[in-house]
Length: 148
Image 1 (cartoon, rainbow, N blue to C red):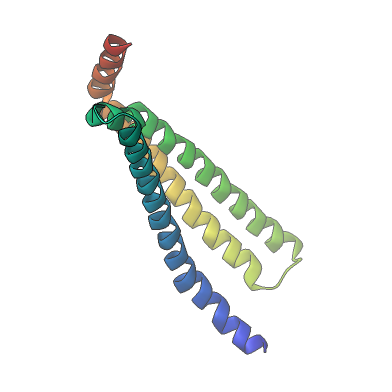
Image 2 (image 1 turned 45 degrees about the horizontal axis):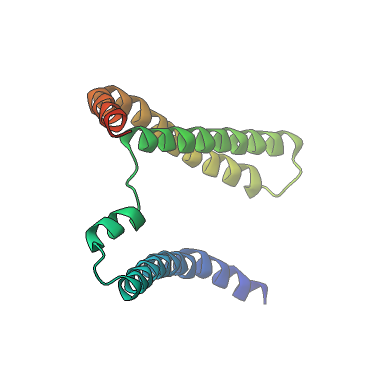
């Protein structure tokens, strides 16, 4: 039974989980599209002379600003960097105390290094993007101030 468990868990994590995530994201997008369609149809039934383009602009999703995208990268960079540092610390502590199996400290340090690398990549992406897109961010802010 344990042998079967060791085979099924990696298959579930590597195959089934990504498929389910893609399915849920596609389903969510389809539901949003169907809701918008129902809103437009209901509005047209009540008021046939309504301007559909204006209604679609009001109910459509607003795209993220460059500044918001950069701040999201900063957030994920900080989170994954701290997670990586924590996992490396956990691996060092397990290696020092010797509380788990022989593979536990090694696996924790490996996953910690991966998370730390991803976090540092996000942080580098944030700082480089902030420097390169400074003029575009400033222009976006001026445009938003002009609309308000």
